Image 1 (cartoon, rainbow, N blue to C red):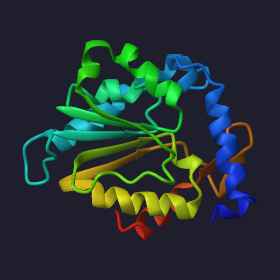
Image 2 (image 1 turned 30 degrees about the horizontal axis):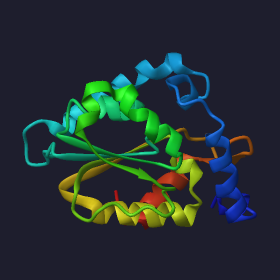
Image 3 (image 1 turned 135 degrees about the vertical axis):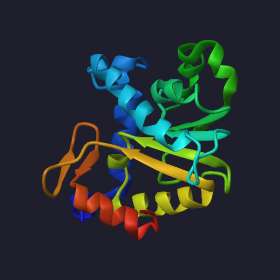
Length: 198
């Protein structure tokens, strides 16, 4: 487990919140200075399209939730596929900049939630897709499992949770700069299973 890397939960979350408060509310800021890799997210769109096609496992396109949404970089990619997208992020400045970043499409943002995911509960039975990208490292193992359990409750029939994140080859590594944990695939799968997801 990676929880052993977190000596003090309160400091772990406070340090991450402080880190993000000092990051510019830009695409480059959201990507840690690697704004040029934003096109990689087009692969995420292709992945999502598989679930939006007709068939027995078809996902509806009413509501999506972007977790760790920042200024709406991923929200912008979700909006063409969903009638409404909600955004949740720990940094209010990012959410405040989202309207300008998203432009006219921001009218289809349902809710802007300013909250850490360790405390956030998606509205029950609301979402067709809950998208969690590059943010699970900001949760302890127990909080990640708890959050994923709450996400399960937030899903509509045939709804899915999508997790896109960095992984290590083996074990878990703490990043002291942004106060996050990078886990290996086995541990991520184990935590997903503990949450009752597959």
